Length: 149
Image (cartoon, rainbow, N blue to C red; front, side):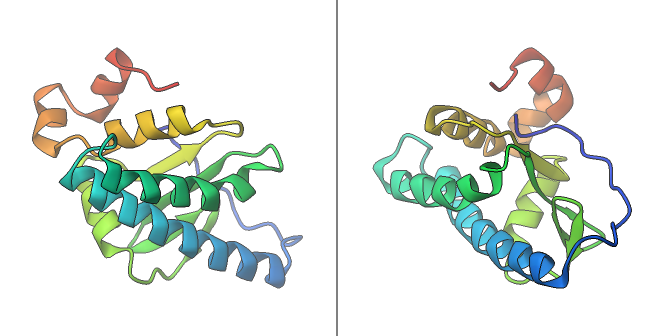
Protein backbone atom coordinates (compact mmCIF):
# COMPACT_ATOMS: atom_id res chain seq x y z
CA UNK A 1 0.00 0.00 0.00
CA UNK A 2 1.94 3.09 1.09
CA UNK A 3 5.46 2.73 -0.22
CA UNK A 4 4.99 2.07 -3.92
CA UNK A 5 7.28 4.21 -6.06
CA UNK A 6 5.40 6.57 -8.33
CA UNK A 7 7.00 7.79 -11.55
CA UNK A 8 6.40 11.43 -12.31
CA UNK A 9 4.44 12.14 -15.46
CA UNK A 10 4.27 15.42 -17.27
CA UNK A 11 1.41 17.77 -16.49
CA UNK A 12 -1.59 17.10 -18.66
CA UNK A 13 -3.20 20.20 -20.19
CA UNK A 14 -6.69 18.87 -19.44
CA UNK A 15 -6.21 19.56 -15.71
CA UNK A 16 -8.27 22.58 -14.85
CA UNK A 17 -6.74 25.22 -12.56
CA UNK A 18 -9.67 24.89 -10.16
CA UNK A 19 -9.06 21.14 -9.90
CA UNK A 20 -5.40 21.79 -9.13
CA UNK A 21 -6.32 24.37 -6.49
CA UNK A 22 -8.78 21.94 -4.92
CA UNK A 23 -6.14 19.20 -4.93
CA UNK A 24 -3.66 21.58 -3.33
CA UNK A 25 -6.07 22.72 -0.60
CA UNK A 26 -7.32 19.24 0.25
CA UNK A 27 -3.84 17.75 -0.12
CA UNK A 28 -2.36 20.28 2.29
CA UNK A 29 -5.18 19.60 4.76
CA UNK A 30 -4.43 15.87 4.55
CA UNK A 31 -0.71 16.60 4.85
CA UNK A 32 -1.25 18.59 8.04
CA UNK A 33 -3.40 15.84 9.55
CA UNK A 34 -0.93 13.16 8.46
CA UNK A 35 2.00 15.13 9.89
CA UNK A 36 0.21 15.41 13.24
CA UNK A 37 -0.53 11.68 13.18
CA UNK A 38 3.11 10.98 12.33
CA UNK A 39 4.31 13.03 15.31
CA UNK A 40 1.84 11.39 17.70
CA UNK A 41 2.65 7.89 16.49
CA UNK A 42 6.39 8.49 16.83
CA UNK A 43 5.97 9.94 20.30
CA UNK A 44 3.64 7.24 21.61
CA UNK A 45 2.54 4.48 19.21
CA UNK A 46 -0.27 3.95 16.72
CA UNK A 47 -2.17 2.03 19.41
CA UNK A 48 -1.96 4.80 22.02
CA UNK A 49 -5.26 6.61 22.70
CA UNK A 50 -3.59 9.96 21.97
CA UNK A 51 -2.97 8.83 18.38
CA UNK A 52 -6.46 7.43 17.72
CA UNK A 53 -8.11 10.80 17.09
CA UNK A 54 -5.31 11.88 14.72
CA UNK A 55 -5.55 8.50 13.00
CA UNK A 56 -9.25 8.95 12.28
CA UNK A 57 -8.84 12.59 11.20
CA UNK A 58 -6.08 11.65 8.75
CA UNK A 59 -8.08 8.79 7.31
CA UNK A 60 -11.15 11.04 7.00
CA UNK A 61 -9.08 13.54 4.99
CA UNK A 62 -7.64 10.74 2.82
CA UNK A 63 -10.89 8.97 1.89
CA UNK A 64 -12.18 11.67 -0.52
CA UNK A 65 -9.01 11.27 -2.62
CA UNK A 66 -9.62 7.54 -2.94
CA UNK A 67 -13.34 7.62 -3.73
CA UNK A 68 -12.76 7.89 -7.47
CA UNK A 69 -10.93 4.55 -7.38
CA UNK A 70 -7.52 6.11 -7.93
CA UNK A 71 -4.54 5.84 -5.58
CA UNK A 72 -3.36 8.98 -3.79
CA UNK A 73 0.31 9.87 -3.43
CA UNK A 74 1.86 12.35 -1.05
CA UNK A 75 5.59 12.96 -0.86
CA UNK A 76 8.39 15.41 -1.40
CA UNK A 77 10.59 16.20 -4.37
CA UNK A 78 13.07 19.05 -4.78
CA UNK A 79 11.81 20.68 -1.58
CA UNK A 80 8.28 20.74 -2.91
CA UNK A 81 5.21 18.78 -1.93
CA UNK A 82 4.10 16.05 -4.32
CA UNK A 83 0.34 15.48 -4.47
CA UNK A 84 -0.34 12.75 -6.99
CA UNK A 85 1.55 14.06 -10.03
CA UNK A 86 1.40 17.71 -9.04
CA UNK A 87 4.27 19.52 -7.36
CA UNK A 88 3.28 22.44 -5.15
CA UNK A 89 5.19 24.77 -2.91
CA UNK A 90 4.73 23.21 0.47
CA UNK A 91 3.77 24.97 3.63
CA UNK A 92 4.29 23.76 7.18
CA UNK A 93 5.02 20.13 6.27
CA UNK A 94 8.74 20.33 6.93
CA UNK A 95 8.58 17.92 9.88
CA UNK A 96 6.89 15.26 7.74
CA UNK A 97 9.41 15.81 4.95
CA UNK A 98 12.36 15.43 7.32
CA UNK A 99 10.96 12.33 9.02
CA UNK A 100 10.19 10.58 5.73
CA UNK A 101 13.66 11.46 4.41
CA UNK A 102 15.26 9.94 7.53
CA UNK A 103 13.51 6.71 6.59
CA UNK A 104 14.54 6.98 2.92
CA UNK A 105 10.91 7.47 1.85
CA UNK A 106 10.23 10.01 -0.90
CA UNK A 107 6.50 9.38 -1.27
CA UNK A 108 3.66 7.31 0.13
CA UNK A 109 0.86 5.98 -2.04
CA UNK A 110 -2.48 4.98 -0.56
CA UNK A 111 -4.69 2.58 -2.49
CA UNK A 112 -8.49 2.84 -2.77
CA UNK A 113 -10.37 0.76 -0.23
CA UNK A 114 -7.78 1.16 2.51
CA UNK A 115 -9.29 0.28 5.88
CA UNK A 116 -8.53 1.85 9.24
CA UNK A 117 -6.64 -1.32 10.21
CA UNK A 118 -4.50 -1.18 7.05
CA UNK A 119 -3.92 2.57 7.44
CA UNK A 120 -2.87 2.04 11.05
CA UNK A 121 -0.48 -0.75 10.02
CA UNK A 122 1.09 1.44 7.37
CA UNK A 123 1.56 4.31 9.83
CA UNK A 124 3.14 1.87 12.30
CA UNK A 125 5.72 0.88 9.67
CA UNK A 126 6.30 4.46 8.50
CA UNK A 127 6.97 5.67 12.03
CA UNK A 128 9.51 2.99 12.92
CA UNK A 129 12.70 4.57 14.19
CA UNK A 130 15.09 5.31 11.32
CA UNK A 131 17.86 3.35 13.07
CA UNK A 132 15.62 0.30 13.25
CA UNK A 133 14.90 0.53 9.52
CA UNK A 134 18.61 0.96 8.76
CA UNK A 135 19.49 -2.07 10.91
CA UNK A 136 17.16 -4.15 8.77
CA UNK A 137 18.77 -3.07 5.50
CA UNK A 138 16.70 -0.01 4.64
CA UNK A 139 13.04 0.56 3.90
CA UNK A 140 12.89 -1.49 0.68
CA UNK A 141 14.42 -4.56 2.29
CA UNK A 142 12.27 -4.11 5.39
CA UNK A 143 9.09 -3.90 3.33
CA UNK A 144 10.09 -6.93 1.28
CA UNK A 145 10.24 -8.96 4.47
CA UNK A 146 7.29 -7.19 6.11
CA UNK A 147 4.79 -6.29 3.39
CA UNK A 148 1.98 -3.88 4.12
CA UNK A 149 -1.54 -4.86 3.10
